[in-house]
Length: 477
Ligand SMILES: [Zn+2]
Image (cartoon, rainbow, N blue to C red; front, side, top):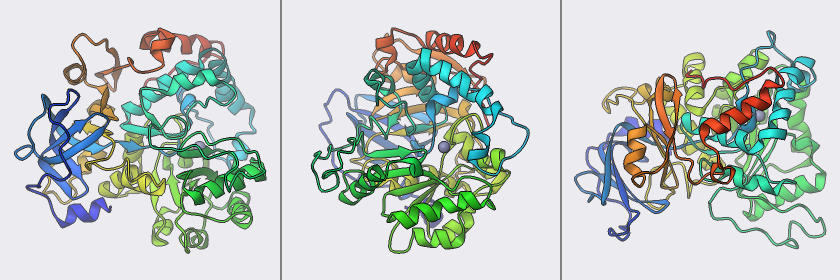
């Protein structure tokens, strides 16, 4: 869906109920009413009924019968942001200000200051507070409006890590909760290779050119079968004029096909002819992380050229040390520094990542049958304005009133969360951009750790203190 086109085309004053009613007496049905961003445009007097993990119906509050639990929210209800590029456990670390820019990622990863400021404290945290770091990073992601993330702490070699990622954001690369069939070890792709199994619907690789050839071939093959919905790889990250960063595209595309479901992260050194190859009989996606690129390389991806070549582009923060603290903040950055229209930016955080990851049957828009992943942003929306979503792009995490993942309210204003959770449910609170927020940790790994949010922060800070570091405040912009 092109959000900007559909909003420009029409504002829906009334909308018929679409989709089927599930049993209205089901105990877990609830309704949220307010202004909605739907695939058809902005609905000013809308309502969504949630049944279990999914959206049962979308309509107007006049046409949709309220479920037993019904809440009215200010601002606008948007599909939850889908973050296809992050490195979650690093987001416990403060912003890195190296005071210079680099040619490519190999250069900064080879510096003593990167080791000292980021690698050393991160290693200490992973040794003493791995699960806590994942949980805290997911809360930070929710605070920026993300409901789906990648770059999680994986259970490979550490099966105990499986508990760390549950119950908060949707972890597309290890515990997505989306339909997924583990392919047989002797299927057409894995025959004789003995490759490790897939973990989930998305595979996320930071160094694809360092993968064993058999593993990369296997992953590309499973993209073809559809067992793997998407393969996200970092590629061509550096200054746009850096030849070695550009060379990565040649190296990957010469040795491999470029099948649909393949997604390139960064692509700062990609050129028009490369973008053309990404859409020539195929559909390779691109994830744009402008703030991190600007800070590390002094420039970013030629997104205009990518879009001219019909490449689908999404936006994501990369990580907190050089990118934004969350998706909402990254959207704001792109609007202020790269002048991308608000409607396009919201599309780049919702429908575009859903489409390029081939998960749009499940997430990315407010439609019946999809998972109930959404975020409420307290922004003053005038549906008749020329750019009605400008107030969303100007919002900060203080304005995020509610985040719901799979029908479960997990983060937001304490009063809203208390309304949606059983009476007496324990909530942990935190201050974000001067505003008090709450998080529901009752289905997360914090339960097994027997830790509150403040315990989690204390454990992480104790580890970081050994390297003279500590968790920073969540940045508002
Ligand atoms: Zn990255």
